[in-house]
Length: 362
Image (cartoon, rainbow, N blue to C red; front, side, top):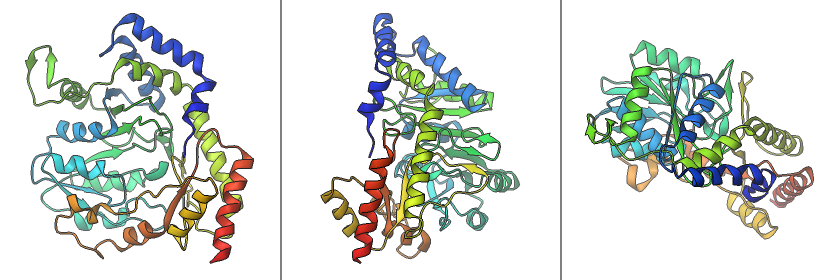
């Protein structure tokens, strides 16, 4: 699904030099390179503050901690995303309140949000799924009307643009993942939070370091979730290539679209966004058969996501099958094809031909 080795080899000297510089400095935790990377990310996004942490999952939890989310508070989000979104809500004792997704974009259906708001609702957590921004103007309008916070789950969308703003710079806090397969990927786990609110930024910095502003003095409940210097150094190098990586993915998606558009439900892209295609997902009639056939022909594929969050054993609460029909329908027929910076036209054609060949058999 990704070719991280080829990507690394193209910038090997830069990466190796960056890693060696951290080793030489011995500043492995909160070294100067972490601050440099944070400043560069903030500049890239156009926000005031960027704070590194240990993972995208941690970023979600820390964001809610910074907003004083308490047990019993309700967080409105989507049931069609990676488990971290719900997992972190549950870890704080809060309650995920799901809103079904839009059938075209697979993102949260913004026109269904207000119906789910109660006196216990404290925040909306939209997920920019697969790299396509949610309809953030409407979400921010609803949040303002009901005095709610907005946490952007931007784990899959760094580099995407909504109208004239980059995602990670619209909600009150945004959460980023640098998992290795992301458009900007580390060589291990790493994450980041971004905000334009100085008070939230200061609180986040304290939370990631045991709730401490001054060493050994702990003023608030915190965690240990610092972005280590080696990952920051690697990401600092790769950030220079992020737009190039995103454009390569967009070109790959366009190539897929031209080959598959007459036969499949290809990704729908909103006219006013820049979708950076962390995943390229289509809907097919016989997904299990398709996946087996592709594997037999040397083609990997993935299902993001086969079981909606409201049907996961750990997070069922009072939800049941049928509660979110669009999500449940999409989860049964969606499949993601390889998309990364190293795919060439010949490989894309081969993959597309095999997808079409199997569909012709049905």
